[in-house]
Length: 212
Image (cartoon, rainbow, N blue to C red; front, side, top):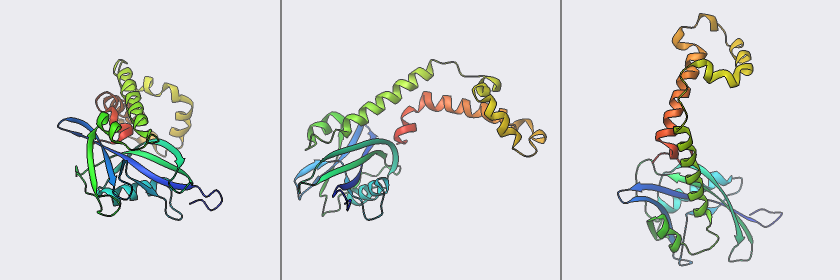
């Protein structure tokens, strides 16, 4: 709680996965309030929003998560009449676990399709699900645009926009002139361009949501 404003600060996550039936997000049930929400919890003293989000999601679900896109903050008044701000991140579960509630704050977990999760959520302020969907659509749209662009096939084209800063950077690298062709800055830049093109084309969600 902010000692000046009395604002409650918390961090949370929107864990997601791709199951046999499609994409799912994770909701938790809290018996104390008999509600369904995304896992979240208050920041400890000196703890940042992201640190709190990762810790609380882990404590409430038993999952080890990888952090993806920042989904922004949600503000509302809590059950004690205090202003509250919760910052959320998209999250994936690298080890593929299903998770389990802690038996105290959370007694049940539910991996649900997005449309079903939207109807299961107890509070209108859980608008973060709409942000998750909007961000995903934006990324996929950008990936489609990239897929229609020609892959750059020469180092000059890759580096042209950075020509001025590149010249200065290369000059600062010792023994650049003695580097082999395979290690030259231009060759490395070309390789990076090809790799990024492939990632954007084939794995767009991995860039902002984390790979599941």
